[in-house]
Length: 258
Image (cartoon, rainbow, N blue to C red; front, side, top):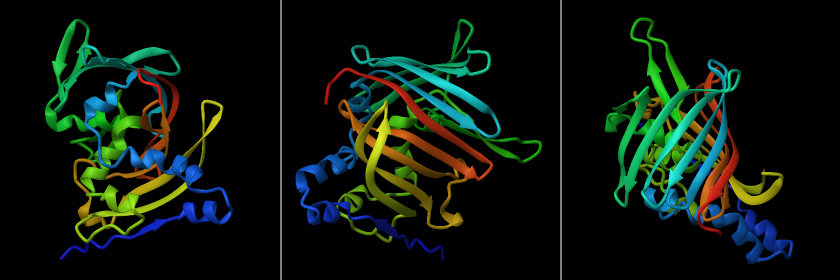
C-alpha cells in the first residue's frame, strides 16, 4: 500500500516577530499572501483583478522565453503570447474565455485559425507549462506555455497533490490523505525593485508512486500579495535537475488596488 504520510516544516516567523517586539500587525503582512490562497478564490475573481502580466521563463532544454498576457475583465477573456527572446518573435498565441465557474475556452491561434484545446490540457494554461513525452524516444520534456502560471500554478499543483491549505494557514501538518511534502517559511521578497512580505514554499510528492503520469512535477515559489492578488514573483516547476522551467515575474498591471 502506498504511504501517503506527509510532513510540513513551517517556520513560525510570527513567534520571532512577536518576541522581537514587532507585533502581530507586521506578521499579518507576511501571512497576507497565504490568507488569499485559502480559501481558494474562483479563477474569475483572480483574473478579474488583472489587466496585464509579463514574466520570463528559463529552461535548460528550450532556453529563454517570455510571456505577455492581456486580460479583459469586462468581457472575461484574454490573449497570452509566448515570445522567443533571441528573435523577439511570437512562437505561440493563446486565447481564452472564462466565467464565474472557471475556464470556458482555451485555444491556440495559428494564422487566422483558432484551434480549441481539450479541457484535459487546461493545466497548461493554469501552470504555464506543458508536459510532453516523445512517443518515439520515450523522453519527456517540460515546455513553456503562455498562461497564468504565476497566478495559478500554486492552486493547480496544490490540487493534484491534495494540499490542505487550511492546515498550512494554521501551521498544522498535512492530513493523511494529502500526497504532498511541504516546506514553507515567511520572508521578505524583492519584486519590482521593492521588498514585499511573503512566503517561500516547495511542494513535492510524498512518494513517486503518487505522482500523476501526465504531470509528475515538483514546485517551488516565492509568493507575495500585490494589488489584490497572491502571485509568485519567482517559481520553478521541475521534473528533474535538468528538466525544469524557471519563471520570474517582470510586470503586473491590476484592475484593483490592494
